[in-house]
Length: 251
Image 1: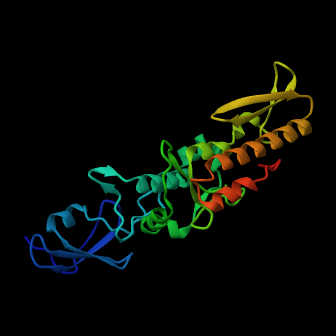
Image 2 (image 1 turned 90 degrees about the vertical axis):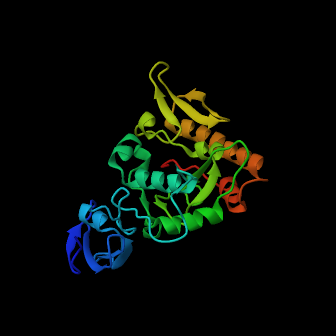
Image 3 (image 1 turned 90 degrees about the horizontal axis):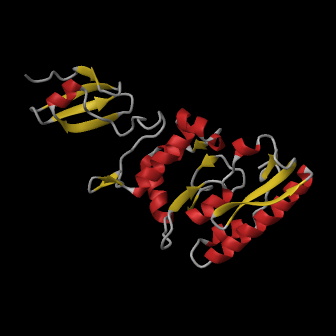
């Protein structure tokens, strides 16, 4: 039985669909009025079951959508690195369970341009590079200190070795400055920082001010040291940002 032009239904995502052409079981054009978009050559069955998807539906954390373009989310049955990076970025900003677990992502957001996967994928393809033996990560706050917005102007691809340099343990330090923790066993302030690949206790001192001062010097020196190690392989803007990076007591 055919469909009637003008017949309406809702897909499984809740979007309204309207039949605008029915030339047979496998040739139905369906209009999505909310997005002013047409799905061509659908099947009658997919319309009746609500299985037709619109690429502008914000199916990812209620914010992200796939859009239309050349970039695919999978290849040979596996999600691409680009899609996984985009999906994880959206989750960090808009998945409440992730944000509760990792408080460092509180107040983080993705720029509207990157809600569209196609826009992000274009930037990713133009900026992605690899370093042998390294996992590559998307970073939002090395180029722009303290930044909370993922966007083309604030993000850069970095090797994991550099990424971990800027990890913060807000839960462990409480209200104390970055790099400083209270050590009950010694009744002193403990200074910790990632040196090499390990979180290392540097020293224990009597005052917060001294502790932060030591941490700041050690951390900035470590960032410069790693920048020099990777200078040959990383983008110049990343090297410059690292070499000039300053630790702030409010980080």
